[in-house]
Length: 419
RNA sequence: GCGACUGUAGCUCAGUUGGUUAGAGUACUGGAUUGUGAUUCCAGGUGUCGUGGGUUCGAGUCCCAUCAGUCGCCCCA
Image 1 (cartoon, helix red, strand yellow):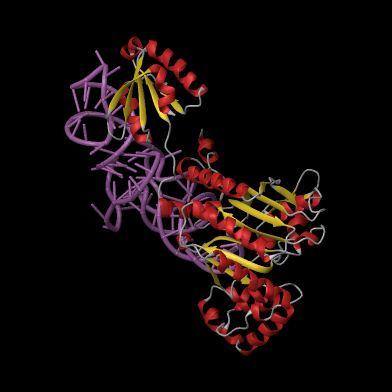
Image 2 (image 1 turned 90 degrees about the vertical axis):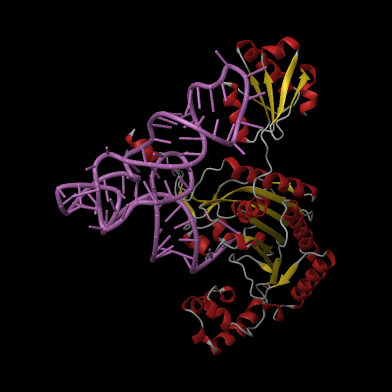
């Protein structure tokens, strides 16, 4: 008894989803499935646990995720395993394992599920968080990126989000990046005293990361910095130009952000993000990009890929801000009065359920007043009352909670009229 | 990993330089209405004051630790 209070506590950063918030999650997931299937994507569900190397070789050994944020342990068989911190690596691993990339056919997958990162909690940031992920493997064209972004756009549009702007950039290729690094380091050296300690570290390990330092002084010091897109190889430059042309052609709202870089090492060429001001410091609502070297790095053929991930927890917060309550109304409530009606209500409910009608049954057997109060509180729109009078007449009393109006329906018409 | 703040009824919160028996609204239960919901009226439980120590004659209040939450840094979804 003393201990039970302490036990009834979820692990730090892990939460239970239910009620209004879960309604939003469900609505988001249903919308995602509908839109993605319409685009020819199919679902994949990969394991929570992956071999440590899957993430070391993809996300990058220098990244914070791999260095200090992974739930990593040795299982009973002595395997080094990790609870996935992101979805892409596992999906690519699966595609390789099942030889899905053997032909030149594109592989279009989406994946909805929890991810795990051991981090300090903040608004919209949990240690178990949920992502919706879409990956397009096997196509290198800007057209495939436009298609993916178009799908993302209709997904967000159907959720009721407006005024979202895609922020895009190109981070080049591993071959072309050294040219930019050299130019950037030269720029940095001229004014290195203006940058913070973190940036001095970053300029050595990953110069791109200096560009998105949150420090205002550093951002000011970056004025006039060399732009990555000026140092691209010719093919990457054409690719970038073509994508922008397509986005304009399609009327997709975007802005070029030469300081946009991504935290995962595997991105090549196109990188993009969508931010939201409703998320406090955790402004990133979604992000993604191209990863042409990843499949090979994970032991597969040389196959390109493009994908993105959106945070469900954060998306739910934004939707709550702009749309309020989740689009959900509980089904009609059937209230029996008296012992005879209690039996008949179960029979009636069964026939309605069998006919596909959504219905809740009041089984507490208390006063009508109490049942009505519950119905009112939980937002029930229609109440069906079944008492001796109704049973004798083969009817049922129907009350519409919003207006308070009541009417009498023949029992035989209930199924049809409720549908 | 670092910093700031918070923790009192199921929920939202009061609670005076430390002072007796811990409060309001809402929700809950019963009644005015034994077949009608936000309303009104009356009556009533609301609780180990996050947890464990310490200071004190005395701690919801002060100190320490710990757990949890919120918000930043870092990083990302």
